[in-house]
Image (cartoon, rainbow, N blue to C red; front, side, top):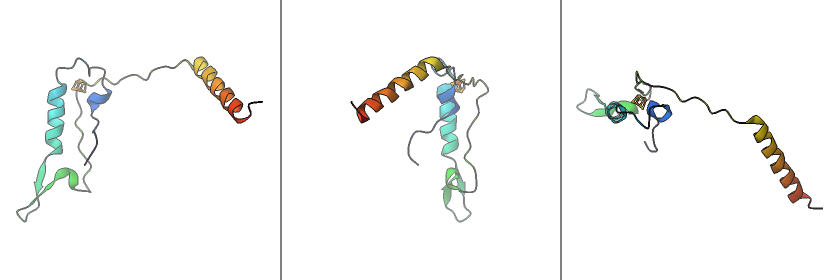
Length: 93
Ligand code: SF4
């Protein structure tokens, strides 16, 4: 497995000030590293069993970030400016 795994902390309002974050991430890491005996004296990582969905812990204190409202009028003006610039580049006459 590679890359950075997102947790609830990634999308939580408390992320910058939370005193539970380190413990929560450590608990999720412990879950990610669980191994299961296969019965023949070998072990397999729980996350590598294809027919079991990955376990993502849920924090009781999670507070989801609200989507940021964009200024629709400003976005429309910006899009019109970009379209105008592109038209000029295609036909500079
Ligand atoms: S409150 Fe929970 S989800 Fe939010 S940052 Fe803290 S540990 Fe993470």
